Image (cartoon, rainbow, N blue to C red; front, side, top):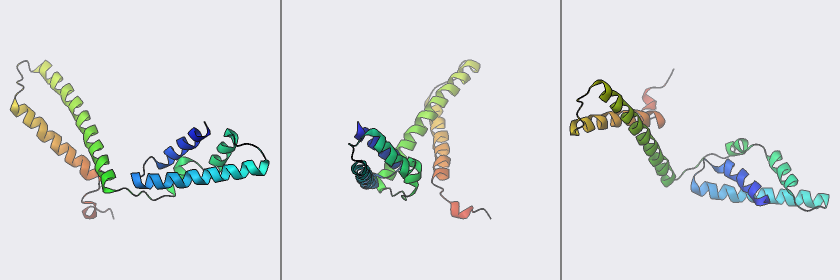
Length: 148
C-alpha cells in the first residue's frame, strides 16, 4: 500500500520523460523517498506509515515542480513513438470528421459518388492538414519566422 502511494507520485513526475530517463529518475526518487521516510520513522521511533510517506512527498513538492527540475531527455525511439501516436490521433480525428462531412454532403447531393477520385481528394487534404500540424508541432522552419 505504501509503495502504491510512492509509485503514483513517481509516475506523475516521470510521465513526460523518455524511457531511459524515466527508469533512472524513478530509481533516484524512490531511493530518496524511502531514505527520507526511514529517517523520519527512526527519528520518531515509529513504524513507517502512510502519513509519513505523505509528509515526505509533500515536502518534496508537487509532481509538476519536481518534474520541472529534470530536463526532458527523450531517445530517438521515444520521439518516434510520440510521433506515431500523433499520427494515429490525427488520422482518427480526420477520419471521424471526414465521415461526418461525407454524410452531410450526401444529404444535400443525392448522387454523390464514392470512388477513387473522392478517396484521393480526401487523402490529399489529409496530407496537407497533417503537414501543417507537424510543421507547427515541431516548429519546423521556425528560424525563418522569428518574431522581432
